[in-house]
Length: 184
Image (cartoon, rainbow, N blue to C red; front, side, top):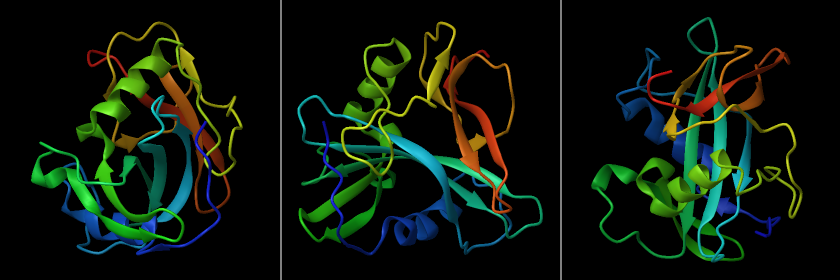
């Protein structure tokens, strides 16, 4: 089980994501700069203990109606060999672990393997900020064959796939599909 360190990261995860997100093709906001807030998320464990895996939900409410985005993150102690240039979100100095290379998890084979394991019921979602604590609010509805991530999230009920919740800036808690089959 991955340990959550109570320490600093410079720049912070949110600072890295704020700089990276507006440059993504799937970003639906109007501005070139954002001031995102953390809305939710969960972690998965790397069986080898090398890669930190976090599925962070961030919310942008600058354009009127808030928009939630799923940002899967891989934290590595070295560069990911063979990763495309756009995969790197940035580097950060971790107060305990030193330099961390932070990648968009869709480009990280460990992240995607653990996501597929979660969808098959072979991995357990972990609380985002507590060590060794399962997160029972993250569930898989039905059998999911693929691991297509939803980048822009919609609050919805009764959908098949990986379902989790997040909080809008006004405090409303909602749930929606984070990953599922491509054809659904």
